[in-house]
Length: 184
Image (cartoon, rainbow, N blue to C red):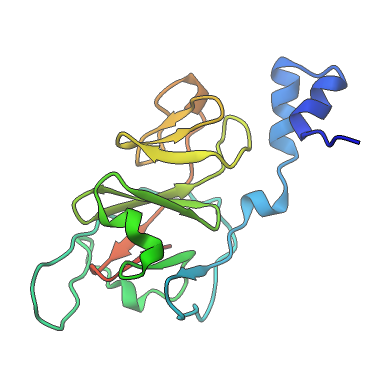
């Protein structure tokens, strides 16, 4: 017996248009809305985690320093990423698993979060679950977040850029010191 997706099942039951969209957005699974904090490329674990991903906020731009001193540089917002304990994702930029983040325009997807380097040393992060339909298909492309399922487009601040992205997208704050990126 072949399995159906939720969309296929609801369509087979006769739902379409606004009724279909209402049902799809009302039956989002728990794993689509909660993100456990994880670390990529390192062994550090947070002392506490946040499980809600419903807060929408603009990402904090971060900058790297080419200084050779041992003092870590902080983000332009003044947040030292090593002091953040309540984070959603922590990425070790020296690990091979984060190689895509080392170039401008590169991104990774982990734990339901898309993290990208939008410009030199500036990282942005958003949920991978699209608000047009609750599909985990949001990526970073050409300076914006983009859903590969139907073409919803979002700015790096989460604002919808077309009718499919009109509901906006949940974005997260980021902090980096050149060695790690913390999404919180």
